[in-house]
Image (tube, rainbow, N blue to C red; front, top):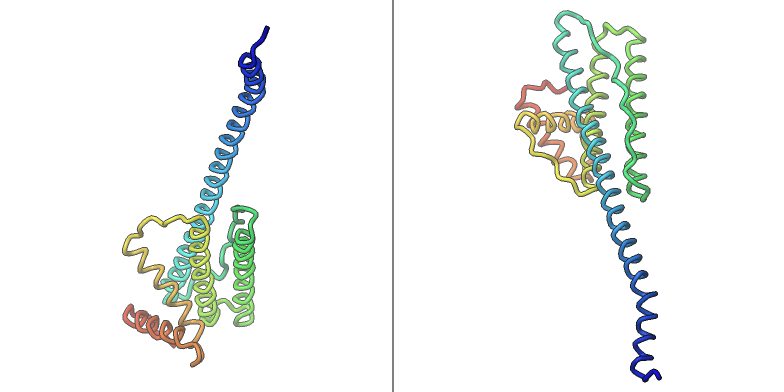
Length: 213
């Protein structure tokens, strides 16, 4: 004859037979879910890093094109008047911020196409006129500065710090941003902070030997 205690133990054993596998199953699902989240975040970081590196390299290449044209000015050419296309970005996720970054990237690609189109129309297609070169310079630095800013946004999106830059790279990126700011013209009086940044940019460019109009 079973005692009350033995009956209780049987109930506990029956519950344990059902509960223990369930606990292990849930635990395994949680481990798998956490691992998948880590994998997805790592993939997002890799894509954001690749997008940022692509944008930064594009900015450097645009500056090199301008410098190459300037070196060829005394000999009247040959010149480069077309900005190269920017490769498509890798998606970093499905959230609103990720879509905003992707849209900004696509807007930059459109701006590159418009820049080339504007240069093609300068001097009525006479590419030996220096006005076309000046237009190319302004648009190239505008695109380059936007590329650097977007690269920063991609790194911030995933909380990724950029590796320390060499002094030459720091100076180059500052020069790109200063050129874009000065070429855009002086801000209105109501934008005091922008006017201060504009004045500082002009001062740095003058110190670097850039002849401003």
